[in-house]
Amino acid sequence: MANEADLREENRILRERVSQLEGERSVDPVLRALLDNAPSFLAVMTPEGRFVATGRTSEAFGSVVGRSVFEFTEADQHAPMREAYARACATKQPVTYESIGYGENGEPGHTYLTRVVPLIEAGVVNLLLLVPADITERVRLERSLSLSEQKLRLAVEATGMGLWSWDIVRDEVLWDRRALEIFGVSEPPRDYEKFLDLIHPDDRARLGEVVGRALETGVYMPVEHRLARPAEIPERWVLGTGAITRDDSGKPTMMMGGVLDITAQKHAAAHVSRAQRVEALGQLSAGLAHNFNNVLGTIIPNLELALEHSVADVAASISAALGASMQARDLVKRLLAITAPRSADAANVSDPRAVVERAVTLCRASFPREIQIDVIVAPGVGHAAMAATDLDQVVLNLLFNARDALESMTGRPRTIAVRVDAPAVLGGPRVRVRVRDNGVGMSQEVAARVFEPFFTTKPAHRGAGLGLADVLLRVRDAGGQIDVESALGAGTTFTLLLPGAPAPAASLAASSTPARAEGQTILIVDDEPALRAVIGRLLTRAGYRVLEANNAEEARALLKVKHDEIKLVLLDQSMPHESGPEALPSLKRLSAAPIVLFTGGISDLPPGAAAILEKPAQASELLRVVGDLVGRDG
Image (tube, rainbow, N blue to C red; front, side, top):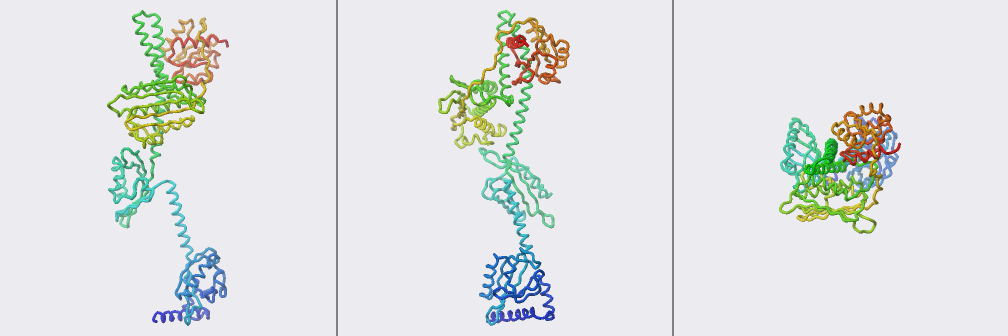
C-alpha cells in the first residue's frame, strides 16, 4: 500500500506540472525556465500517441500539440514505439525505447533514447510523459568506431598479421587466432619465459635485447627471428613489432603489437640471392673458360704440329698430352653449354643422350670419387620436346639430389644409375629418363612434399628447397610429368616422362675437303700473342699468307690499306676495350671479306659474322672452316 500511495503522489505532482505546461507562461517561472532550456523536448501525449502539451515550441515544426508523435518518426519505428506505449500503460511502469526520427531542427536521421512515464489517475493511465534524449552523436561515434574497427580488422587479416598484448602489471598475455596459428600453439604462453621457449634458441638473446630496450626506452624496434621447430620441420621466420604504454609515472604497463609470418619472403630473398650468386658464378665461369680456352687453343695446335715431326718414343707422350687437352676442351664446352642463357629463339627440342652425357661428365668430375654413376641409353631413343637448357637443369638437379642422398650413407657402395629409354605408350612417342640412387631414401610423408617450393630437409647451407620445385615447373611447361618413388633405407627413383619430338633439321655441314690454299691473305685479330703465333704457323704451313692485329683498332688500320688483299678475318670474341661482336660492324664497312668469330661462349651467329669457330679448335677444324669460306665466290 505504501508503494501505491507513493506512486499516486508522484503522479499527482506530474499532473500538476503538466497542467502548468498548458497554462500561462507566468505560472511557476522557475519550472518554465527549466522546460525552455531542458536538453530534452518534454511532451505529454495520449496513449495513442497524440501530443496534448510540450515543454516548448519546436524549432522546426512550431507547436505540435494535437499532432501525432508518429509524424516525426520513420515508418519502421512505429511498431516498436506502439509496443513500448502499450507496455507502459499495462505495467504502469516507466519504459525506455530507442527510435529514429527528426531532430528539433528538422534534420532527419536523429536517434533518440526515450523514457515513457505513465501518468495514472484513479488507477488508469490516460496520459504518457515522454522524456527523449538525442543520442545521435553518440550513435554516430559508435558506428564510426565500429567501422574503423572493422576496417582495421580487415586490414590486419589481409596482411596475415597476428596480434598480441602483454599486461605487464598483471603479467597476462593475450593472442588472437592468427598469432596462435603462426606460432603453432593452441593457447598463448603463460609468461615471458614460456614465450621465449617458442623462439629459436639462436635468436632468443637478440629478441630479449629488443624487448629489454623497449621496456627501457619505450621504443619497440621491429625484429626478424625464427621460431623453435623440431629438426625435421622447415624453419619458420617471423617479423615482430610492438608498442609500449606507460602510466603517469612513466612506468611501462602494457606492451602490444603484431607478428607476421615472413618465411616465404625470406626464402624468396634467399632464392634471389642464390640466383644472383649463380649468375655471377656463370659470368666468372665464362670468363675463366675463355682464358682457359685461349691456353688450350695454344696447346692443342702446338701439340698437333709437334706430333707430325716427333720420333716414336716421344710421339706417345705428345699424343697423350693432346688427348688430355681435348678432354679438357670438351669439359669446358659442356660447362659453358649448361651455364649459358637460353636463346630467345632456341628450339624446344633436345637430344636426351647428349644431355645426359653432358650432365654426367660434369658430375663425375665434381662428385666425390666414391660415388659411381652408371648410364644406360636404350637404342631407338629419339628427341624430347624440351629445350636442351631446360633438360640440362632438370637432369643436373636430379643428379645433385641423388648425390646429397648418398653423402650421409655409409657401409655399402654408393651408386647413381641413369637410364634413358623410349617406352611404348599410347598418345605418341615418349622419352623416359630415370635417376635412381641407393641412398638413405625418404618417408612417404616427405616424398609427398618434395616438389613443394621451399620444402627441404637439408641444412640451410645446402639449399632453399627450390631445386625440385623448379624441376616440376620445367617438366610441366614441356607437357611432361615426373614421379618419385622412395623408401627409408632403400633409395630413391625419379622418373621423368617427356613427349617425343622430331629431330631438328640438320645444319649445313662444312666441306669435308678444304679448298686448296693459293696464297690468300688471312687477318688474325687476337690479343693473345701465343695464340696468334700458333694459328699463323698452321695457316702458313697450309699455304696462306698471314697478317696479325692485336686489337680491333689495328685490324681497322690494316683493312683500310689492304682491304682488297685480305680474303678472310679471324676475329677473337673477347678482347680488351672492344670485343669482337662490337667491332664487327666497323670491320664489315671496310671489307667484304668473310669474318669468322673465334669464340668460346657464343652459340648464336651475330649479324655480320660468316661463321663461328669454337675455341680451342683443332688444326683440322680451323683449316676446314677457313678453306670453306675462302673458297667461296663472293
